[in-house]
Image (cartoon, rainbow, N blue to C red; front, top):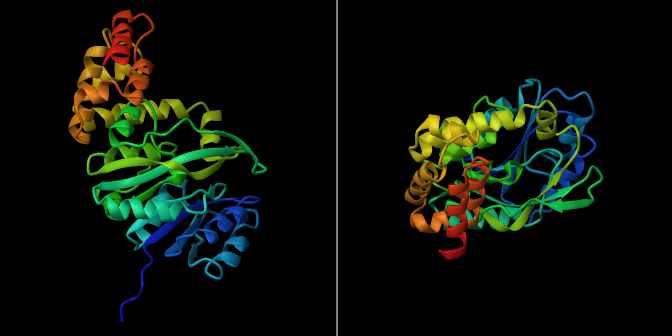
Length: 310
């Protein structure tokens, strides 16, 4: 007799998830879409995280808790994807909240768009106590916008993404490259399918000193690792010269508009839109300006002309 498999597997690596873990699990219990299971990898907590997980899973939430094998964050993510047997994999961190209809909307989009391999959404920020403190700048809602944003930064909020598991495995799953394991995966996924963000808020992201991203930024390594990851992934994805792209990241490329035009052609090829559509998009122009040197006045003038007249 064939065992029933939920459509979505929610993967949560966690170490010392208190005091926020209960609220996170509650946000899953309140989802309007119910065909999911929770896979939690408990990484050697010294608080009562394991007790809370076992109180909720599988009693109140279908799924299982994997403990006794602590792993680094990126390795535990990869193992969770391997353990899942579902069609879609949803990410969530143990200190964030999933908006009540997040899974319903993301599943519907993936079901209706078989060429899409990952779907995120807009993100709100909250403080340690759960109070609203702001909204992430508008994340791109088209594939060409995602690719244009990815020239300079990560285009999807990792804890709010739902992936096709088959695509994740096809490109090699998560790799050991914390704290940019999400960007590394997205760069590889972009070569096999589309990625977008929904226009609606799907995630409430908690800002606190102990978060993975906050820890990396405090150590002064985050931006360096982002640029290192982009420097390896973007040239391969968009077929541009790696040394030229590294100079763009360092804002040292003379006449940046010339190689940036080549990147626009690569984005147009992958996303199926015109080169001019890419060049005049808000996402491309923002990334282009971030990659242009302070004294590259010609490129800056050309970007302004494109913005105003095309």
